[in-house]
Amino acid sequence: MKACILFSIFVLPTALMAQDFVAPQGREREITTQAPELKPEIDGIVKQIFDVEKPWQLLNPAAPASYGTGEQNVSKDTVAGTPHHSVTLTIVGVEW
Image 1 (tube, rainbow, N blue to C red):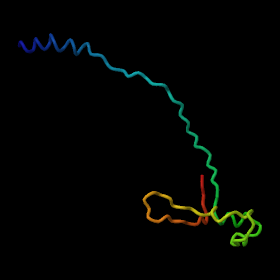
Image 2 (image 1 turned 120 degrees about the vertical axis):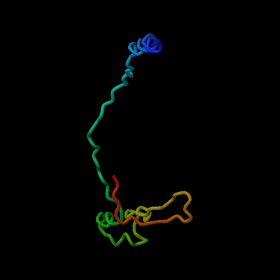
Image 3 (image 1 turned 60 degrees about the vertical axis):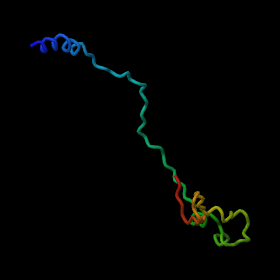
Image 4 (image 1 turned 90 degrees about the vertical axis):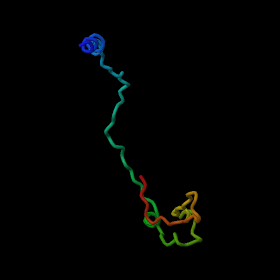
């Protein structure tokens, strides 16, 4: 009986005076739901063939500089830790 009285004297009043914690609200951010416009660019040997007037000049090593260099269509793997740096030709590439 004493425990019940002590409980009602000390514990119940503190439980009745308990307060709810409400966290302060931060600044509201504006949320946009529109996706950015994608403008893909086609790149590579196939695009170059259709862009030039004389496509066979792309194979000519003595072609004028207006046809570009062969390095435009070469992709190099320069990742650290690879024993050999691989080089690949870009036939068709799409970048956006």
